[in-house]
Structures are given as C-alpha cells and as structure tokens.
Amino acid sequence: MHHHLLRSATRTKVALIVESGDVREVHHLALLLGYGASAVNPYLAMESAEELVRRGEITGVTEEEAVYNLIKALGKGVQKIMSKMGISTVQSYCGAQTFEALGLSSELINAYFYGTRTQIQGVGLDVIAEETASRHRLAYPEDGVTEPHRDLAIGGEYDWRREGPRHLFDPHTVFRLQHATQTGRYDIFKSYTARVDDQAREIATLRGLMSFTSDREPISIDEVEPVSEIVKRFSTGAMSYGSISMEAHETLAIAMNRLGGKSNTGEGGEDPERLMDPERRSAVKQIASGRFGVTSLYLASADDLQIKMAQGAKPGEGGQLMAQKVYPWVARTRHSTPGVSLISPPPHHDIYSIEDLAQLIYDLKRSNPKSRVHVKLVSERGIGTVAAGVTKAKADVVLISGHDGGTGAAPLNSLKHAGMPWELGLAEAQQTLRLNGLRERVVVQADGQLKTGRDVVIAALLGAEEFGFATAPLVVEGCIMMRKCHLDTCPVGVATQNPELRKRFTGKAEHVVNFFEFIAEEVREYLAQLGFRSIEDAVGHAEVLRTREAIDHWKAKAWT
Image (cartoon, rainbow, N blue to C red; front, side, top):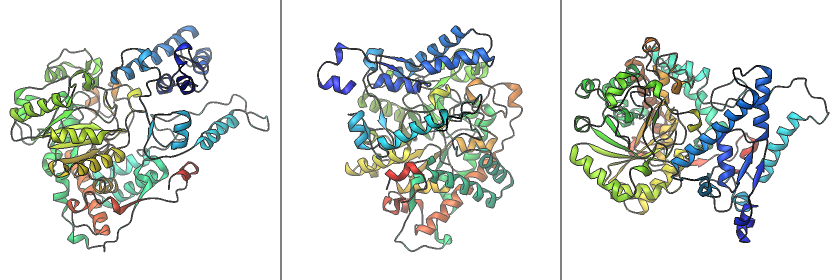
C-alpha cells in the first residue's frame, strides 16, 4: 500500500494505520514504521499485558499501568533505534526503509519491500504463508478441539529454553567446553565442536550452509604450521572492564599474553597498575567516541589501537554501561562519576566523514608510532566501500564484526535485528579491497561468535587473517549464559562488579590457554585435510567453499 501510494504520488495525503496481533517486540514496531506505517495498534500484546495482571503473574501494577508500561517500552526502544540511525523524528523514520533483508527472495522484496537489498536470496511468499497458517492451526485446530487453558509457547529467542529455538551455546555445549578446557581433554573438546557445528548446519548460522571441497591433495598434519604460530592470530573481543569483572578481564589478558595473542581492553580504559605490567596488560587498546579511560599513557602502552566505529552486538549503537555497574573503581578507571550511566554515542556524533577518520588514525599513529591502528566495522551493506576508505586512510587492520554476539552492558533489545552475519561483510570487504588493489595494504580480522576450528577456517577462506573470540572465552572462564549481564547479577562473577558475586569467579588463565590451543589444533586438522600448510596459504581461497545443496529444513529449499 505504501509503495502503491508513493508511485501514484498520493502518499502524503493519507496516513496508514496498522492493526496487528503479531506486533510484540520493538523490532516489529520499528519495521512497520520503517516501511510506511503512521501508527500501529498492537492490540494482542496490550490484551496479553492486561491478562497477565488479571492472572496475578504481574503484580504491583493495574491493567492500565501495564499497558502504559508496554507502550512506553516500545516507544523508548524505537527512539533508541532511531538515535543510532541518526534520525531525529518519527516523521523522518516513517518509510525510511533503513533495513537490509536476510533470507528473503528478490521476487518477494520487489513485490512488497521495493528498494530493500537482499544479498543471499531466500524464501518467498509461499513459505511466509505456510508459517502464518501453521501458527493459526496451532491456536485453532481444524478438528475444533482446543486444549483447555492452552499456554503460549515459552519463547527462547534470548534465553535458552528446552522447548525453544536452537542456540549454539546450550547446557550441553557449555558443559562440554568447560569440562574440556578445565581438564585439558581434547577429545571432549572435539565432542563440543561436533555438536556446535552440527547445530550450525541446521541453519543456526550462515556458515552452516557451507561445506568444504578441495582439489588439493590432503597433507600430513605434521606439515601444517604449529599451534604456537596459529594462536598468534587470535585475540579476545572488546569487552570492557566495567561490562565484565576485573577478574574476568585480567584472566583473558594473562592468557593471551602467554599465548602471544592479543586481548582487547574494550572501551573502558585500563587500570594504570596493569598498563605497565607485561603479564596483565591488554595489547589492544580501544578508543570509542566516549573516550572512556583514554590517556596518553593508555595510548603509548598499546601494541594495537582500535577505533570503535561499530560493534557486533549492537551495530551502530554506542557502548552503554548501566548506572548500577558504574562502581567507584570502574568510574576511576574511566574518569567518570560513580552511579551514572556511561553511554558512548553512536559514531555519527563523533566522526562525520572519512577525512575525520583519517585525522584520528593520523593522531593515534603520532601518539604511538609503533602500534597498529584498527578500524572496527560491522558487517552491513556497503562495508566493502568503507573498508577501502579506511585502508586509504592508512589503517593497518580492518575488523569485520558480525551481527550476533553478547554484550555485558546493553539492554536485551540491542542484541538482535541489527547488522549482518560476518560471512557476508567479510566476503564483500575482501572482494572490494582486491578490486581496488588495496588488499596487500591491510590486515583483515573477523569476529562474531567464532566457536570452533571450522569457523576459523571458513573465515580465513573468505579473507580473514586474524580472528576474534569473545563469548566462547567467557564461557571457558565460567559464564553460563544467564543473559543477566546488564543487571549486574551474574551468578558466576563474570559480568558483574558486585564484590560478593565476584567471589564466585573460578576462571583460570590456563583454561583459556587450553581453549585457544584446542581451536588452533582443530584448525591444523582442517588445513591438512584441505591441503594448506598455513593459515596464510588458505586466506582468500573461497573456491574451497561451496554452499550445501541439500539441507534438511523445509525453509532452506530456496538456497542452492
């Protein structure tokens, strides 16, 4: 309707109001507004809120207050999305189509979402119709017999639920990973990676749709570069001191320093006592638009300086540390005030052009001539052009960050529906850099829920030379994926500043070292199988990858 009215030049003469029972999340509302809705009536969500009060499952509020709180939360969520897109008014957001499609066919896009980009094709209207019909059959069975007091599905999009959708980290994989790294058992680690990779093939990830095929002769694993060389290409993700505890942060740094890899401070600065300690310091110092903890000593003591233009868990959105996690010791490191939320604004507040970015790169190189300068980008449409621009601006490393991942600080609403898988962004950046003759001038790094040796090898084949891990090392340290990072109530002392909860932290650097050495050993096995003697030899050989033609899922028939 929106596009029809646009084509007939009458769109501004009428408002479109959507009344739908499907709308229940912020993203649903944002999507409708972005494709032309002037107003939305999520009647079923509001009636559900009233029913929860009537049942006594929500207490302390009236039915009217519950509905008001729901509407307020949806409004704040849309406001946050608009702010990270640099849009000030709903009028400007309405019909702006600031979206990229994932898994939808061109025919569907051209008919209903004209002007939206879809890179990998996917399902058509028939699959969407079948999904809708199946939900309707569940609520209204054809035989007319409904179970009394039928409950809604428990969910499980954010937290793992036994009856919910698949998560790569579930109780089985978390237990196997922790047990393997704590006992040094590579055989148990292989059972962990087998389970993760099997789930990935069931369309949990885009790389699950890929398989290996090589014309090269397999070689002996003894001919492949050793574990000690491969681990130098690994780094931990930018998880700041503040979002995770001091113990968790330091343990990662100690482990990476022992391996010869790199740990990342995140945008929270680093304690001066650690800056000059070669065992406890983080090699990569991050600079974000909030400039938390950035001092001349901080810059001068870095091996790598990373400019945070975006982050995987919440692309385009600035970092956010909730007020309850800003304890006095965190505030001291960040040069801020205890108990006050710390928000690093989205990049458009800070860097308006490639010239501004080039100036910042130049300034950082002047502050520490020996360090490499990274630019952290998120996988999205046009990332190749941006990667080429930052390479011309003399960045040494371009980091392609994927859309999924965790965050130790931001609201759960920021975890999903933003950015694209790193597989797409990495492939686009690699191709654009090669086309422009720039590939030799820059190191390409990938991160975003890397969990197994297979993930690393696929990233290398798509063009990455270095690899970042964040969630997996936290799980090795003891994280059990409670998704309570933003509440400062982490029960295992990983993502909390509460002194009592921090006492429960049991992670050891030796466990993290085991994890990275196991990953490197599995990478060696894949390289030997594919006929490569080193990661360097494998980088960019995308011809070794092919998309799987037969996948056991009814929605996947559109991919070949």
